[in-house]
Image (cartoon, rainbow, N blue to C red):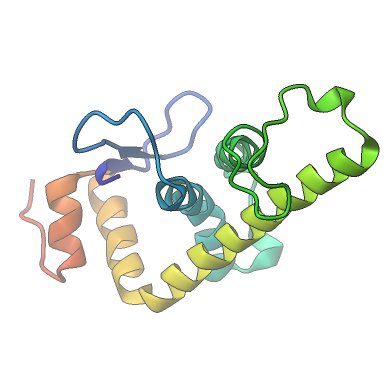
Length: 160
């Protein structure tokens, strides 16, 4: 999903927000789309780790982790997107055997870990663009999709 807006302005429980807006109505999502949403959710924590170091990460990404975990859990328990567990749904996980519960948790952990690593690779690969976006957000606080694209192209934004 394309980014609609990014802001560092605190809103409610969040200290910043990236708004995604689908290009058209979607009734189904592909595995790739779900994984990409998880990767976006991991971006804030990964950025903290890369910029400030692991000793200076914050609690700011907790709602992003909640979102990524919900997606991973649905992929495993509702959408049959686990190679290990197969195309089966698990509606009431509390009534499952401890082994099955453990297998579900392990699959969720793998999805989350892999997502974190993909986000880290993306931010490392695009460190200059990341730095440019961070500087633009520090200057303007909120960027819309067009402004984000201008920054990613290495161009300067017009003074507001």
